[in-house]
Image (cartoon, rainbow, N blue to C red; front, side):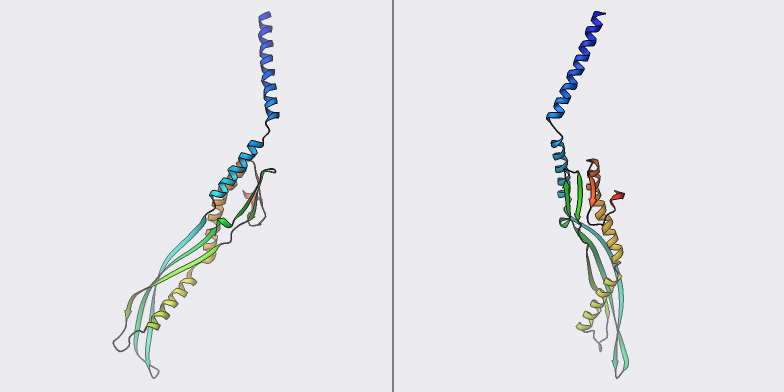
Length: 201
């Protein structure tokens, strides 16, 4: 009976010592290093993501242009030019222009500024064939007009709204890696740009 009391007293003493040691350690080393680590983890992820987001569309079109040759208002011959237009359309977001602020005191990730999309449309025109006659040769200025018309047509064919939407979706996918990390570190996300619905994050 005496041995049991001794063992019980010893166990209670050890538990009390461990509790005192844990309480002392907790008081002497606050959460500051953890907060600092969270801050650097988030900042590092933001820095690593500072690159260009690019979404591309590529398409080709064949265009047949007929050039009439007239004398005194009467058509005497007709020439034909077949062009192939290959178009590359891009929407880019320069993430170096993004401003995200990490408030480690209040545990907030604040979106201050998001980059605007830049759309570039780059058509290149190749002459596939030219059907001209000996009497009516196709002139250089006519070729320039045909290629300019093909490029203008390619500009109109690009669905800018769709391209922009795809670019925005890609931007949000990139930003989501930071948002998921912020949530995991128990940071709230604030959007000062009013461009993101943070309730859905």
